[in-house]
Image (cartoon, rainbow, N blue to C red; front, side, top):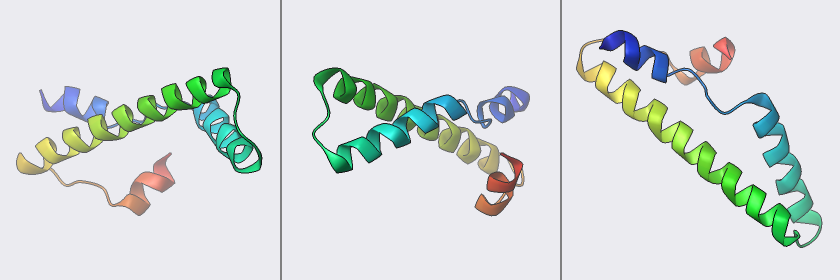
Length: 79
C-alpha cells in the first residue's frame, strides 16, 4: 500500500550509526583501521547503502503512482 511505502521512506539509519560511521571514517583518514574497526565500518556502510536504496525505491514507486515527492532540501529539513 502507499501508506507502507511512505513508512519505508523514513530514515532507518540511526543517528548513533551515522556518528559511529563518521568516527570510523575519520579514524581511517588518520590511520589504518584494526580488523574489528574495518569490519564494523563495512557493516555500517552496507546498512547505510541498503537504507538509501530502500528509500529511493519507495520514492520511485510513489512517484510513479502520482505522489508528490519531497525535494532533497525538504527531506534534509524534516530529519
